Image (tube, rainbow, N blue to C red; front, top):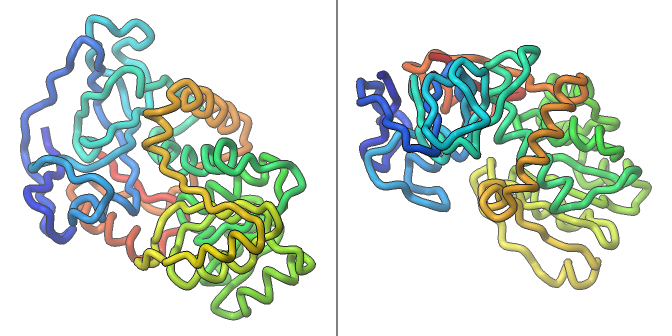
Length: 324
């Protein structure tokens, strides 16, 4: 099969598109013929050796796929050959085939296109877990989403609205603000044209924000840390801007809010039952039209470098996916 292979921790441009052996499944795994794989910002960090964990070399990146089951391990009961599925894999998704533990694979209805299903896992599942388990957001609370037109930011806008929050979307262009509004944002802020801090204050009547879904890091995080309401929750999602901020902890003391880390991979491992329940709820919302994956662009597998570069350029509106 063809796959994208990382032979050494280096620049994204050094990834290789090459022939590799087909995966061999264990009794508890299924083999998926990959139709589409989601591309995520951490993928670029992983291949450069800058992520939270470093896989053994060589490896195939890619954490979320959608496709068709082509083989089933002897112990697998709930999945059958020919089923349309989405799957979560720590590695291996950027390939024509991938072996995944059956517990991390679930059937999807015919109403969800495979390209969209491949983008549903990481972005939407992270936003769902962040707002449901970590923030425990309540209807009527204010939610500020930074990087709101990106994959996980747009997911947070949709899910926050579905959970009854008043959603404020912060974006870098008018076009991105419009996309955020189309996906449920009540208020949009173009921080290249408006004073970000003053705009948020005005949107909240100077009360501050109950929950911040913070994807950018750097100065954006520092501003958000000063915009929190009493008993607020500042969710640390990632650092798409490139700078990991240093937090002045006295602000949490004085303003009485919490800084809450969100790492969906650990959630899946530590709370598997909650993970399954979350995914089932997401799929139900999707079939009801309450959430949707906005595919910004689809690239052929051999053009993975271009796809990752598009994600890291922060020009993406929604999700980028690879197709085989």
